[in-house]
Amino acid sequence: MKYVDEFRDGRLARSLARAIAREVDPERTYHLMEFCGGHTHAMSRYGVQDLLPPNIHLVHGPGCPVCVLAIPRLDLAIELAQRPEVTLVSYGDMLRVPASRRRSLLKARAGGADVRMVYSAIEALAIAQQHPDREVVFFAIGFETTTPATAVLILEAQRLGLKNLTVYCNHVLTPSAIQSILDSPEVRELGRVQVDGFIGPSHVSTVIGSRPYEYFAEEYQRPVVISGFEPLDVLQSIRMLVRQLNDGRAEVENEFTRGVSRDGNVKAQALVADVFELRPEFEWRGLGHVPYSGLRIKNAYAAFDAERRFALREKPVNENKACQCPSIIRGLKQPTDCAVFGNACTPRNPIGSCMVSSEGACAAYYKYRWRKPEAA
Ligand code: SF4
Image (cartoon, rainbow, N blue to C red; front, side, top):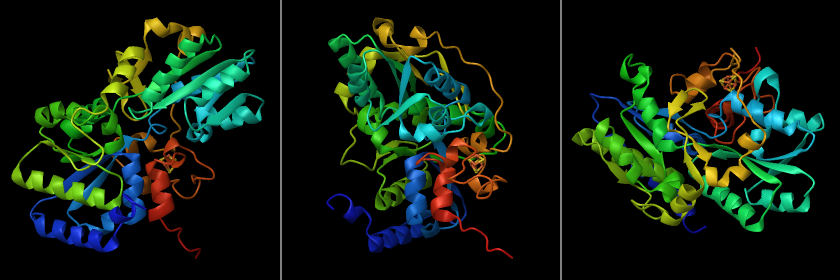
């Protein structure tokens, strides 16, 4: 397949890995955070860490939209779904994520709630048109990759004069989350998480470009390489980061030149800017309340805002103490550090969001890197 197979060539991958091994400084370590869960899965699936010299450490970041959704926000989605007049429309990954008291949208559906799974935001439009007697709520989650589609949904609903469609907006921003990691006590004060450079997600940058990372590369003196998701993309990005660190540079570089420019998709950015505005703060699972890291619907489109129509208010909840997702999302722990990984918590019976999502670090480890111990 064009643009796929040539980026999965094992011979080239081993040759790139040997080039990296020649370039690393044996006297130092390199801690590189892949922000996005898609990279975590690609690295696990293709054994990238096993190809690298032992002084390159990959640190998993918070870039999994399902994993970072704070439980009070998910609780509100379940409460919405349980209203008799509501049809809640959601991406599939969200259905199995455990909320407080081990509830989930899937369990709510089993209990009679009208919860429907879609693959794209615009499908909610057809559902609202087909069921004018129902209040259809689209449960919008995700980073900059999915936000333009939600903006289009709202603009289309307005154009068609739909009165029974609203959006429960949980869209979040990648650069703010990276800045929050760099500002966290674990990185700044305690030194418990070392992050020397970032592997940035290319799909996000197809929308926002590479420019938004320039500020913190300069301010925090950490290099960023925007990387594709195939194994050769990832290895080449690691090599570019190693070179920057060896040279003492902290720049934004673009490995994914076949899809990313400095300015990104200006049309998509204009759609998002038309419909959404920054929230002063937004709660992330694992990162807490992060300033200017989430989006809300502008007043001009208030009629399509589920939080206003249904007067939604978050209630604080306690995390399940067994689950280490918050620490994994912050890069403090690895999935296998969790005592219930692979025994009480599996993809079939997930306790935390990191085991549910197709981008979650626990799911990646379980699927690709972990072998169940043989029974004695
Ligand atoms: S293994 Fe399960 S319980 Fe442990 S951190 Fe991962 S998702 Fe949470």
